[in-house]
Length: 485
Ligand code: HEM
Image (cartoon, rainbow, N blue to C red; front, side):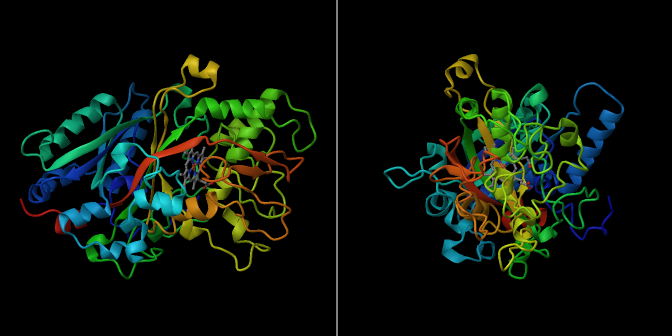
């Protein structure tokens, strides 16, 4: 552990979810349209004091730690509110957001995710040339309000406060809510595990000049990889002053077919581990799942513990992210090339010789993942039938200073690309990311003793909506987006 230089980031100016993650057991994602521009700009002045900044989240986290140390009962009552706007939102508000879209008309932020889903992300398309999404995401969306908290009662109360500010559902409303989706951390021991059962949120970028605890793991990133206007932001020199200290938020409404995923694991168990030891069907199914994700359900990375789960390692922040696939460019013995975590963060795969030439730095492609689960636990009926009847999944959200380098790149260039990683002399293709890859779903490396064997699989994650937003700084909100009341 080392302590970096004091930050030059203004933690009172950056919205809290970006760098520190709003603490949450439950969270509302509220999409809205602005219906009265002049009133909205005034109302925003009353909304801004509700916004939780990074500094505010750090205080909340301190309060949570103190509460735990004192072994006090229950959870600290707290809420966090953030806001973000789409390109269409800025257009509606009459704000020139051109410095947020250096790529012009083809820039994903300007294009919007509904179009990008078809041209780039590979989402299934309907006959009318729209993505096969839920109707509330097929219409224009101007903005997104996040409200997180420790209980349903807290976030509902905060939502009433927000609704009152914007006059929601009154004749004087300045915004119209499109959809309010509630996410919830899963109950009991499944807390922090996504719906397939894998611990999530272990690996996020460690930010130079911000994070004070640096555990062994991937290289740290410059703040501008996540926050606009700082070193590491490819658009740093072009951003309008109001557009600095913000971040792009890629939101995806992702449904998970959990019984179908479980059936797939059950029907295709790995027969032997990489040391030729026979596995029981249950062990073989667990290993199959771990090889698809790149981590065991506990969170232990298979690159460190390839054939046996190690829950103690999973819990140890000094060890659970300390792997790099180094020296493994010609073998999938420990971790398949296409495993979800290897596809989305190839670590040293692309950087350390003999890597592809020229080597590809991974740092610019790191994203800060937030998001939360939604939907109920599996019903008995679903467990028995192996078929999904209730909607559940992940409200996926990630921040970055460039959608082109971040979310869009990860989805298109790595997850959907059967030839990635592009090592020479591979006998076959690594295949698609088995969780999020869109396209013909085949991957190799699931059997550690027969790395070339390919396995076809159905879709387990279905995108049903999303949008690209920009989460502005407090100064940007005050000086440019709101007007004096
Ligand atoms: C329902 C959808 C998804 C599920 C169930 C899922 C699940 C997981 C799990 C279990 C991990 C390992 C835990 C960790 O390292 O924190 C992980 C890591 C990660 N996922 Fe996903 N994920 C989903 C969607 C996505 C999407 C859409 C992207 C981006 C395009 C993405 C990017 C990443 C990244 C960057 C990591 C960290 C890799 C690393 O640094 O080692 N995931 N995900």
